[in-house]
Image 1 (cartoon, helix red, strand yellow):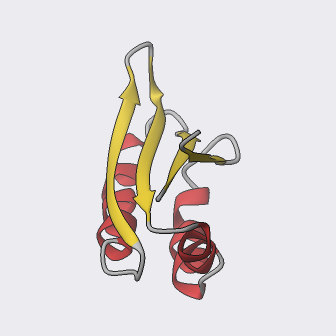
Image 2 (cartoon, helix red, strand yellow; image 1 turned 180 degrees about the horizontal axis):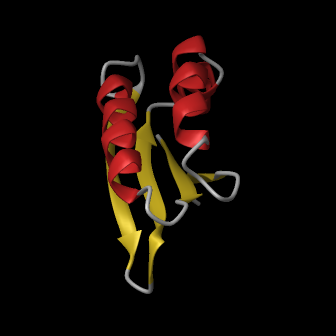
Amino acid sequence: MIRVLIERHIAATLESAYEKESRLLLQYAVSVPGFISGETLVDANDIHHRMTLCNWRSITDWDNWYHSDQRKEMMNELNLMMDQEEKITILQQC
């Protein structure tokens, strides 16, 4: 199992629109092969900094989702609401 940390910084005033679209993205990911679980967190010191921590069966499963047309299409909407590029960190147990 791997964990993927996705960090995004939302442009001011677009928080509610972002929340709606990001929930759709996570809801869709739940049905993707290899997806185990996920949660979204807000930085306590910066309400515009969002992190999604998700668990995947393997790096291959994550890569398939990351490069999928569905994710790219959904990210096109989210990218319009972010003022920085998303940062993705793949984590695995030592």
